Length: 86
Image (cartoon, rainbow, N blue to C red; front, side):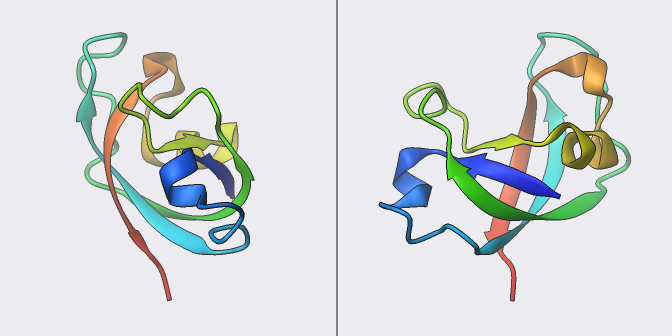
């Protein structure tokens, strides 16, 4: 379970290798109306920078496997809460 993080989180590679617990909190009205799987969380390892995330209200770009663990992949984008794990 991996993710790319926006520049402000990635912080010049400081977040690379760190783990974050990500929870789906709702849809973005751009796909499935109720995409979350009952508040399920997934722990992901940051492995890259997501240059397209910054300035667009996105914090992470989750791998397909990580996204599928917490939400319907047909939704494309979801709202999340996250915190550093460990």
